[in-house]
Length: 150
Image (cartoon, rainbow, N blue to C red; front, side):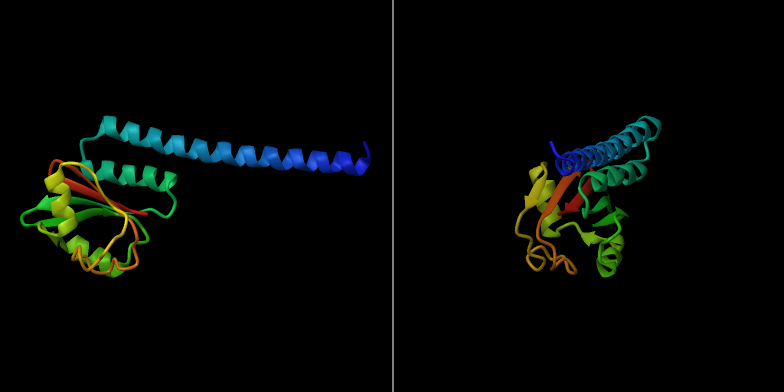
């Protein structure tokens, strides 16, 4: 085996080792966020705080994820937790609140199961400032709704 072949082999192994180390570090970071969420779930009953922790876990696992956690208040769904990256006009709107009959919310509440929209239509859903989004998911728990976009 020549010196150049040996060097190439060593460099390839080094690249594989670095990639494996980077993957292990990513997995460790993800597991750490799950541990933080689990610890928070055992020490608090504050659902908004838990939603913040859950958002961190989701974003760690799904880079680029945009999400919001809503609470039912009177005749509106009001966003209590939002991720960075949502358009400012959308954040202002959802923090003010959306009517209970907003189609994606009403469908999720009626179905009592998570709903997924693979071909998001902002006009049909009566949700402005979301025209650039492609896919949405909604989940309901009691009088709360969580939304995420990929």
